[in-house]
Amino acid sequence: MNQADPLIIAGVSLGSRLFLGTAGYPNQRIMADAVVASGAEVVTMSIRRISLDRRGSDTINLLKGYRFLLNTAGCETARDAVLTAELAREALDTNWIKVEVIGDRETLYPDVAELLEATRQLVDAGFVVLPYCTDDPVVCQRLADAGAAAVMPMGSLIGSGMGVANPANLELICRRSNVPVIVDAGIGTASDATIAMELGASAVLLNTAVAKSDNPVLMARSMRHAVEAGRLAYQAGRIPRRARAEPSSPQLGLVGS
Figure 1 (cartoon, rainbow, N blue to C red):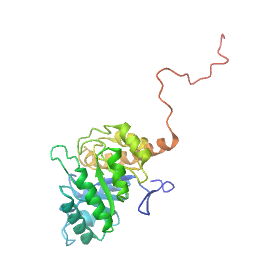
Figure 2 (figure 1 turned 180 degrees about the horizontal axis):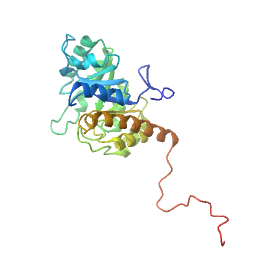
Figure 3 (figure 1 turned 60 degrees about the vertical axis):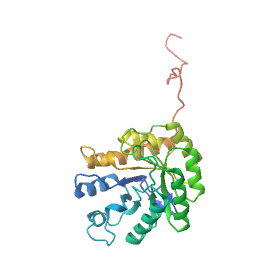
Figure 4 (figure 1 turned 180 degrees about the vertical axis):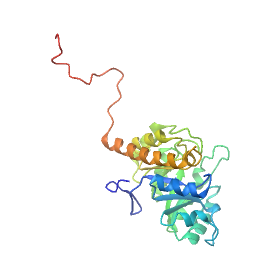
C-alpha cells in the first residue's frame, strides 16, 4: 500500500489502512492467502482461539511477521477484558489490544460503561488500546480522553454486512477525532469499505466479509483496492451534492447562440 501516506498509531507507522480478521475461513491456508492478498499489516484474532503456550496455533505460525491485534471478544465486564488482555500480552509479547466488552448478546452492542473502565485500566497498565464502540461521537471522545490510541466505531452490527448504517455520525466522529478512527463491523463488500474511507476513516477493520465470501482471496484483494480508493477520494475531496443539474460543459459559445 501507500507508504507515502502512512497510518500512525501509538508511534507505529503502517502502510496499509486495512486490518483483517483471521476467523471463519474455510481453512488456514485460504486465511493466510487472503491476508497476503489484502496487503494488511495488522491481523486480528480472539485470545480465546490461541494457545497461551504458543503451541498448536497454526494462525500464529502462518502469520509470522504480521502485527497481531488480539481482541477480547466475548468479554462482558471490564474485569474479564483486562484479564484477557493481560493473558494476551503474556502469550505473544504484544501490548496492542482491541477491547471488546459486549453488553447485549443479540445485537453485540458494547457496554459503554464497562468499555470505558476497561480502557482506563489497560491504558494505565501500558497497553495500546483500540476499543470497539458504537458510532456515538460522545462515546468516541470519552474513549480518546481515556487514552485510547484509536477508536473503532461500528459501521453496523457485527457480521451483518449492512455497511455504514449511520454515515452522518461516522463523518462527524472522523472530523472531530484527535486519534485515528478505524471503522469496525458491518462491512459487507468492497463499496462499504470505500464509503467508510470516503467519510474520513483512518482505516477499516473487517473479517466476515472476506472469510465468508465465495472467494476469500479475491474479496481480500478487492478490499485492499477499495480502501485505497476510498482514501484517495477522501483526500481529493468530493464535489458538493446538488438538488439540480449542473452542466459540466461551458455555456458560452454554444452553436446557434
